[in-house]
Image (tube, rainbow, N blue to C red; front, side, top):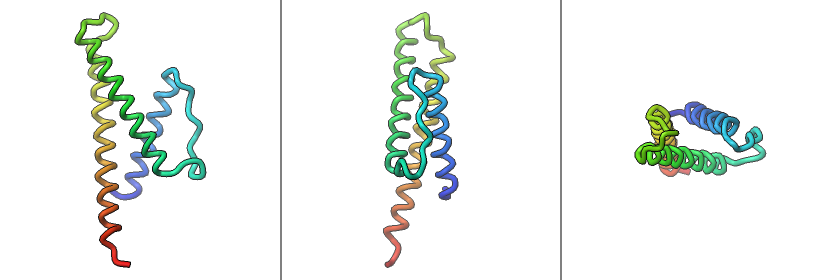
Length: 109
């Protein structure tokens, strides 16, 4: 993946997080600028959001398995797929970061 592709993935993750914030009970986050946050902060926020998505999916699955009439199979499966896609995106970004780190470390000075 190129730097542009990683930037696009991060932008999509931010967009999804903002959409969820607007639809949920959280207030929408302020737009992030380069001066306000570092890459490490953005990565941490993205990982925390993926963790939240996974917890929501697990909670829906558990409620469905316990026979909660308020939870249907469609919502449970959609939440499960969102968690799966979010996790896969994090794994891909991690792989690209490790690859970039190895490339940088193998450069001669």
